[in-house]
Image 1 (spheres, rainbow over the protein chains, first blue to last red):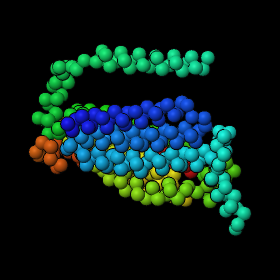
Image 2: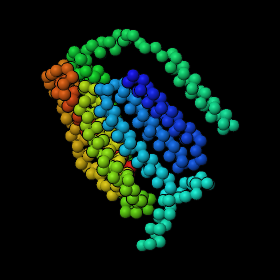
Image 3: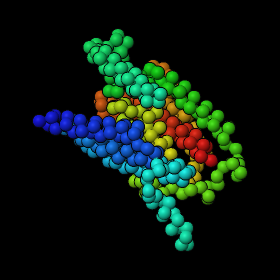
Image 4: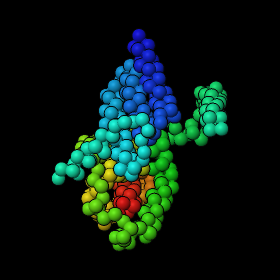
Length: 112
Length: 229
């Protein structure tokens, strides 16, 4: 029973990894590609590792540590990359509409 | 055209990985050389991790050579990049764009975690997967994180160089101790083997692992710091 639950979790995680890969190919600009790659692969990693914990209950603590590490590093690194890309002026896709970071900088500049 | 090349790449790699997966057979027995190592390392050296046993005893001289190569790289990078920073080319640290608050806080949380993990890898090299080289690299990755998060962070290159030299000298001294008290240069059986799998066991392998970790970590850190300056 535990193995079945673990297998299903790993399968769902693999599906999210697949959607991350699909997003990298299909998304229109650098930011959305980064977003697809990070969000989906973070969740996919978490699910796969949780499924692994069902297979090997002895590894649970180590797996929790790895999940914590992935949850800490993956979004932060993606954030740093996206910020750097924004600062060197990599364009967004035409229909993005909103650029919150640029707006925030403009308000900061206009009111000293 | 582009679509066709993508489809081609996907089919190519798919077939490649499929052939690997289909042709994979679990090998039932070890090759004679591998079998002799697998039997010898736990018995003679008292290390459950056969690879570390090989790297830090039978092939420790080779490991010393690898560290020497890394030292040459650090020296070469220092020779090329170690001059006084050119103010017209290099960004002075004061005008460099500060990293965001998210990165700074994440660094404060992650750096101790990474350091502890590096220490774990280094000190468990003789028991589980790990060893000095890998741990040293993880240690240097912690320094990259600090350099990214804090533009003003100054690396004491001289101190790192001193630590690295001391670790290297001690490594060779342990090797000479093996020459005098045991079977040859870098023989790790100068210390009692202890119980198989215990933390203090496997002779001098944990000591060599620790020295290797310090040396590799310092060398990689110096290289990184040079590239930043």
